[in-house]
Amino acid sequence: MARIVILGAGVSGHTAALHLRRLLGRKHDITVVTPNSKWNWIPSNIWVGVGRMTAKQVTFDLPPIYRRKGIRYVQALGRTIRPHGDGDDPTPTVEVESTAPDSLGELSRLPYDYLINATGPKLRFEATEGLGPEGGHSVSVCTDGHAVHAAEALAESIAKMQAGEQQKLVVGMGHGTCTCEGAAFEYTFNVEHELTQAGVRDKAELIYLTNEVELGDFGVDGMVFRQKGYQQSSRMWTESLFTERGVHSILGAHVSKVDPGVIHYETLDGQHHTQDFDFAMLLPPFGGVGLTAYDRDGSDITDTMFAPSGFMKVDADYTPKPYEEWRAEDWPKTYEVPGYPNVFAVGIAFAPPHQISKPHVSANGTPIAPAPPRTGMPSGVMGKAVAITIADRVKGDPQAPAEQASMAKMGAACVASSGTGLLKGSAASMTMFPVVPNYEKYPDSGGRNFSGTRGEIGLHGHWIKLMLHYLFIYKAKALPGWQFIPE
Image 1 (spheres, rainbow, N blue to C red):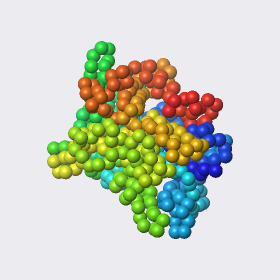
Image 2: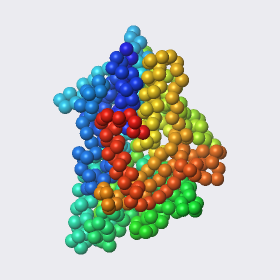
Image 3: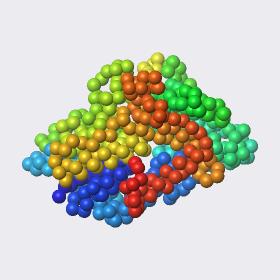
Image 4: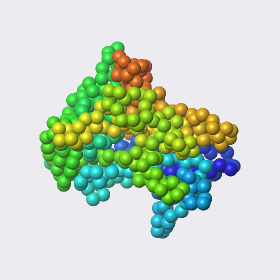
């Protein structure tokens, strides 16, 4: 019997767990360790954050799903990996800290034959003084709870506008090294829609504040695509959307502090600025969750298995080199941890080898550079690929080659949709192939294939986003035929 432990039950971890159970049957032990008892379809938190959906519509309880599928559920945080065992016992284990009610943080060790790190990110609100909904002065949509709070704050701001007050609303990134610019863009799109629907657009100044040097960068060095026979960039496309909607932008910004009603930020020229606000939704930077690792003799090997960011090192090329020398081939293919073929890291949990967008440093030496996104569709594909690898090795040859799922050979889609009804709503839809640009293979199209890289806007994109919401929640609940819904 093989023992497989999965840390995290987000898109990557949950996908891996369901596919492992499907591929291996019930005779092998699959354990999912997650601090939360609910699964959250995070892309729809945007709609919760403007009051168009409730938290119940984007979450469901995990334990009943895992009971039905014969997957062991442990409500806990992963703490320490011992890949060679401990002392006289060579059995690999992972130490977890219970987060179940009344558990008092109990520690326990889970033995494993295969380990998948799918912990996702630590939301590093503390990286910027005053950032975030818990003790800070801004809101967030990173969790369903945060999104509910954001919707309440937005409703209060709209009520003030309806009473005749002018309001300044800022949406964007709360630090110079943030990722998920696409989520901030989508939330901006939704807020503008809500202001228009409420009849108060003329009372609002809406500002998009980002660490991107250009609009449309999205942390992936932008996109070039053809639309109606013409070639254009995601920069031009995004600029036109914002211009049509009267959204102002602050680019190349590192937020250093958030005071009540005031954002302090630095720009690439080294100048320091302030922006006053009545409502601010600012995303935090991400980091690893703080896992540690120890060798059998008790020596600390955390730096061997993890990058300084706290994300896990996998089969990528981490050799330091100039941006101009970074290549698509640097990116991981199998997500195996070097030296540990039975340990994998997927989704946000793996350490990217480098940024996709060109990194910048301000005149004062402050990094202002979007981190690479690796959420949503890529996370699901990685989770399934690793599940196939483990299943092949459990059922057959332990040295069987790993299933590959490189982001340099993988496409992704982003649908920024506003409104949730069937007849009202709009969406800015983008697809890219591959996610990590290959400038050698596609030198004339921004490193991507034109046939898989597009940008469109309209009601049909909104229908797609709404369909994906229901499809992926259906899939995540492992209802009949779930496995036929693509990652």
